[in-house]
Length: 177
Figure 1 (spheres, helix red, strand yellow):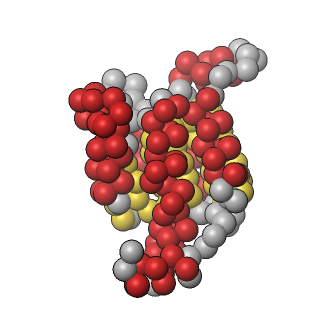
Figure 2 (cartoon, helix red, strand yellow):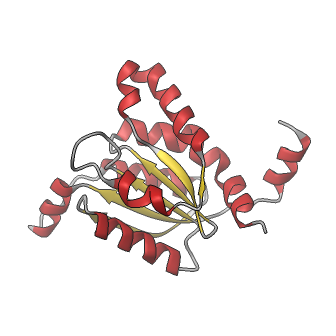
Figure 3 (cartoon, one colour):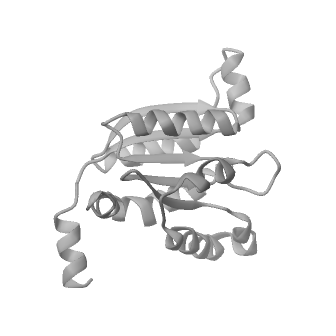
């Protein structure tokens, strides 16, 4: 690691406020029917972030809906407690996978390396199907935004190998003027 990168990391926040959003129409329908949906990917994000010393500010499960996704993003942006917005679900290629379309145009800064490296790591784990992931990251008004697939294994990979090791550094840089 370079000395500049090392200095940036040392001066970066060590604890972040995390908003976890799960996008899944089928799980949302279960929730509407008063059933307890299994949200393993959301559970993984929450557990790993908390274990790393971060605070879960909010967690929601919504349908694959552009207005609902954007509403959750606006709520996160309105909160002074949220530093990072992590979405699981809706990054595939089906017609209902609209997380990319809902959030990507709103990014002020893109982090293209996140998606590139995520797909590379995924390729090593699952092979050529990794190219179908539209996982991405960026920042909006100083808040880090990560959009992940709905697969628990993909979420674990992204959190452990990419997001958590650099989260404080990303937040620190995105808020620097």
